[in-house]
Amino acid sequence: MRTWRVGTISMGAALFFLGVFLLLAQLLKWDSAYILASWWPVLLIVLGAEILVYLITSRQEKPVLKYDFLSIFLVGIIGTVGIGFTVLQATGLLQQVQTVMDTEVRTSDLPAFALPVEDRIKRVVVDTSQHPITIESSIDKEVSVFGTYRAQNEGKEPTINGVEDYLFTNVKGDTLYISFKELPENTDLFQSRYTSLKATLVIPATTSLEVTNAFQEVTLKPRRLLGSWEVSGHADLNVTLSKDDNVTLYANNVQSFEGDTSKWTFARPTQSTEGEEEEVLYGEPAKSASLKVGTGEYPITLSNTSSVTVSIAN
Image (cartoon, rainbow, N blue to C red; front, side, top):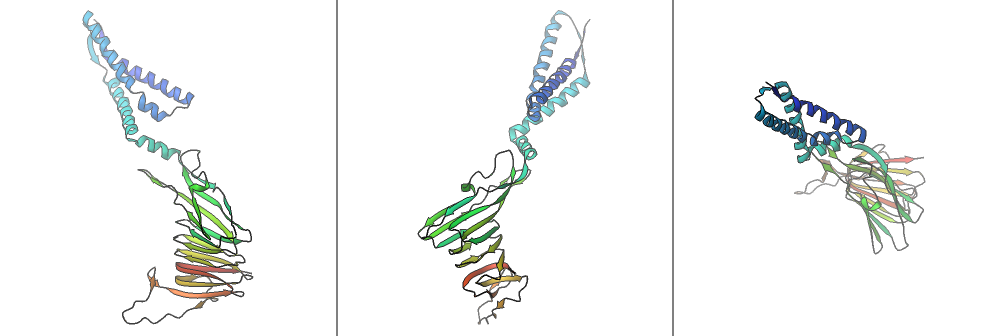
């Protein structure tokens, strides 16, 4: 009389096929997670074949049927793991886990932008969005942008492939409009992926400048300015001047003045009339002041900002 141990063949086949798949995954550089998610149906095939063989054999003889509980238990664990990987794959969680594992933070160069400025362009209007920007003047008749960006990359492809991915420009009449775009952000179950940039904008010294709608740090380097600049609505403004500059800074509605404030001339607060409230910025009374360097011929107006820091190099 023959003894049949149900589960022994399935266990052996499970280990055999699992070993083959993992070996091929190592040699052929397959994704092991997807291998574990896709190979387990072989268990059902082997187990079904084992049952069919038992049924065919039992017609010819009366085998003693025994269950190899350890093998069945291990086959069940392996099958459950495979089914679990399949569920994760179907819901997209497996892909998200793989993305997290493949993600790296990389700092890259921004695609450089350069645009010759015609004589008819008298003004440049800049929207810096949520990015920290450094603005300088130059004797060249050209507007240019360069810098770096930091991104969490899932592969080898860069996040920013061209100027159009981070910058928008348009000329209307005598004005050049420049807008820095919001960069890609993505939030999933495990992490938030973001992109940030630090750029330097260079404009001709004779061209007027207006900068608005930003909430990050902005650094101004006029460098022999020959026009007028207006900057408003920023969290922190840093102005770097030299003793050879001929500018006057007008700071209006500023919460605080940082650094050496001895060169500032502060305006006296006006007496509020009955029924009027004193203007408050960022929870504190706003201040206004002016600072003159050289002849003070060219104005730089700073307004509605959290803090202003000025440094004058010798």
